[in-house]
Image (cartoon, rainbow over all chains, first blue to last red; front, side, top):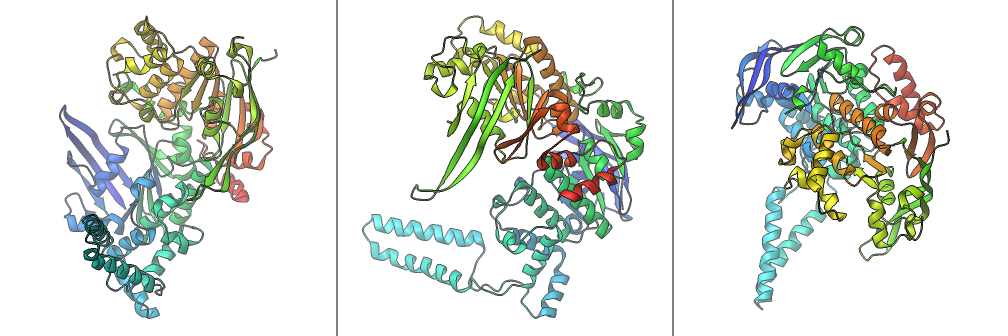
Length: 343
Length: 285
């Protein structure tokens, strides 16, 4: 599915070049859950951002090859990358609240993904059920323009009132009233094909009452629900591969178990490949089939899950396993790791 | 050996009213709903529960940062020093409250948010001393504290952003220890850290506890960490402590349904038998 060969990524900083990735080799097969573990700053996230070219401006991929389904995408064009992001590789981020847009409803955000990657399917559904593709709202600009018009009108009304020329403000009051009336009249439009697709996407991640959730804003949902929306969004483009960058770090244990189970179920249903980035070895043991351990920008060990827990080869893997609290009163062994701590 | 009780909490309640636009109460959020708890001297008490169950409100009520609706918190002789007008937290006067707060150090969850980014480390760690009236030898005491948590002289004149997450948490612990407290309240101190760094911080807290005979209230949602560090564990669910037991008992013989669900939800670092665990989990959901 995805093959990364000798990937090297550098960050150019004022203090010189930082080599974040030092020759990473990874192969993810069709339909497997692949775990990538390592401590903070070892390059886990940089690896997945390098694949999707979501790196900040100071970073560059200096060497290596990224092959997706036999196609070399190392130097893919921006338009091709847009098709890949969301269309072929979906991504879930660590903190769902900062990954979702706070001023757009869930409906709008998932609708955006669908119009980009699933246009044909949406059109097909529309013609089949004889409903409009989009919500046919008339006389409506984008939400930013609408807001600007309202803000200016209120400003002028206030200005003219202060100047004692209230009558000059009347047209602006009429404008606001007209906008309000328009919204009221168009409130009960029938559901469009896009709406139906969004609701379907939300029910796929087992969200209760998807119609209600589609209308709400991200801050109105709980952390677990937000993460489910993120997963729905990543899957909406019918991606064949999912990159999950620490999807459960911000969540409680009980919610974490639910989200991991959801990812596993969906992976099985759709035969997807999943690259699960985490620093929790427990999460890896629960979900993954293969694991790679990363340390200082390199993959130091790669094997099956059973193998890595019973017979770790590399010293770093051993010390990671030793650092897990097991419930005795003895001190935890931390030798050999975190030596970058001593600045 | 019978353990001395250092704080005795009984039937503690804290209800937050929800108000509408005109200031009338329309609902009550019961953040704490009858919490009974006694904390032994020199031991670690772990509190676990999901987010929003009232763990942090409990911590804030213990410091009287929020006033409890009802219930009492009785302090031991060791905390009051026999010089307060009452040993009931609610009846303390303002200057007594300030003296009492010296006995409790708090370590917060997010080390970056808890340290002022514009203050030097020496000022951050020294501030509690200055507030509680110490004027001399602050620098020596700060160096001593930093050495205690595994940092050194060279860190005095640095800003928080120059440190890694683990080091910042060490600074947070040094600051909590500054006033020589009897109790440390750690509010999810390791949930923002990696496993390896987490292990270092847990070790540090256990070492300090032995050295200074501290009582620790350890709040977390990660059960494996709580299991490692605590001698008694309380499970909190929607404002109530549904189960309080010794650590071994709670993991081997959980009684409350919520405790059982929590235990099943922990991802085990053991790939064998995960199918078995999955079956168990599905029973409850």
